[in-house]
Amino acid sequence: MNFVWAFVIGGLICVAGQLLMDYTKLTPARILVTYVVAGVVLSALGWYEPLASFAGCGATVPLIGFGHLLAQGVLDSVEKIGLIGALTGGFTAAAGGITASLVCGFLAAVFGQSKDQS
Amino acid sequence: MKLTKEEYQQMTTEASPKSQVVRDCIWAFCVGGGICLLGEVLKYFYCKWGLTLTDAGTLTSATLIALSAICTMFGWYQKLATKAGAGTLVPITGFANAVVSPAIEFKTEGYITGVGAKMFVIAGPVIVYGMLASVAWGIIWYFWRILFA
Amino acid sequence: MSLKKGDTIFFENCPSITGFATVGGKKESEGPLAEEFDCICVDTRMGEECWEKAESAYQRSAVEKALNKAGITLGDIDYLFAGDLQNQCTASAYTVRDLDVQFAGLYGACSTMAESLSLASSFVGSGICNRAMALTSSHFCAAERTFRTPLEYGGQRTPTAQWTVTAAGAVVVSAQGGAPYVKSVTLGHIRDFGIIDINNMGAAMAPAAAETILRYFADSGKKPIDFDHIYTGDLGLVGSTLLQEILKQEGVTLPNYSDCGMLIYDRLRQDVGAGGSGCGCSAAVLCAHILPEVQSGVMKNVLFVATGALMSPVTFMQGESIPGIAHLVHISSQK
Image (cartoon, rainbow over all chains, first blue to last red):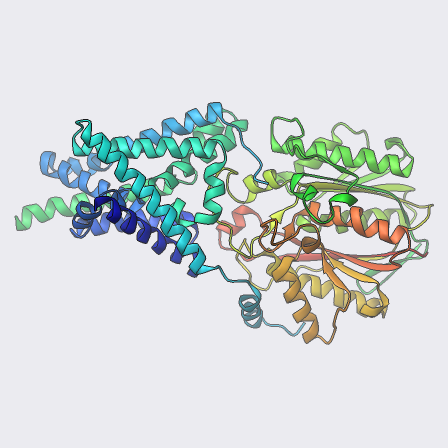
């Protein structure tokens, strides 16, 4: 059942993004920023954790989940080390994803080449 | 010409073809859902191999990012994205694509000023505003705990 | 000699177009005009290491072929007017670096073919020189990374977006020679009706095209039916609809009208959104389709109106609206 909910919830979050793209003038970059900030806010309000435990990757793989990850990281760090945790928590939690993207980006640049789309 | 700007905006809106919302949404739902499903399957196997839930989550993200990078390198991600729209934009694979694609594109401007400098040209704002929001939340949470807990 | 009336320059000794050539890329080779190109280079990299150099290679190839068809060498060219879509007009500058010729670089965005042809014709028509060349190009990949996103970036194009043509076109204008002739030219006025959507450039350029066409008809006293065909540069689906609506409001209908952006691709089959765009679009259709038909006498009088959207990625991000421009050239099979 986990798999079904991951598919459905993940799909619905993407449909929400598609509606923003088709009906508003928001550029993709703005939609991504909106999603991440929305993730932080929803997580802070305590609304996102229930969805994440219900839909698994359906809630964590979309970029809202990235915002959720940042908020959770900050929450844990503040509880452990106090106010400094507000500075360190976000990047600590996001380190894996950002570093993986960075490494993959570099490797792709070394081995890949820009190609015509036509 | 007698035309005013307001009239012309109206004419432009009428003359511009609209996005095919239903078709776009079906694509976004299936592809976006599919990527999340793939993530869930990966996480299931990583957990089965004895990783903790947090580690499995991180490794799942890293795997999806690597897959996205490979697809981007071969030009497949871009081809899928023209159909899937937000289905490929919103998942973490879209974030990876936004990092990898400028890295490849600006290689001709050198590894420092091209690849290094341009890598976060699209994805940078996501990190900047995500971090700002999380810092703000950290500060609020700190004082909330002192005052109410 | 020539006579300026209103906005239009009428040539008494009409300059002749003695050579013209166009070289296209892969997507162009799959379009309806494929057969009419002088040369198709399916490898859009042209064996170079970057897209910018590839665009210059397309230009060099077009120059060579146009000179060959005119039966002259580069030494016979007095002035070269050239432009492209790259920042600081570098595709042209780097092409001309290897050609020893007097050079003026132009930036008119997608209107550059009509702009360079107007200037070349004016120089020749007014007796300043014997021969001048007009050269323009655009390259999908070079334009995409300058104006939009990296090529591998997964973005969905909006239905109003247009596809930059990969092609270069070169035209030799001479004081003596046969058809086709340039009868008159009208350089345009900038018109900006507040369009800010960078993915709807046809809409941004349509009012400028209407303005130039109306001014030309007023100056020349001619009517749309006096022409076998009227071509606009790259208004695409949205822009060409809007142009006809604006002209209808002004009491002018165009019975024989096409847009180069709609001719160069099969819009639906090739998935190019609202049609083709870029300097290469009007240059390719002019050299591959329009000039041969005028030369052979199939068409006697045509108007070629290339349109340009004069924004940059910086002004776009600063929220500025897009200024449009259109230049008109009257090409005829008779002097």
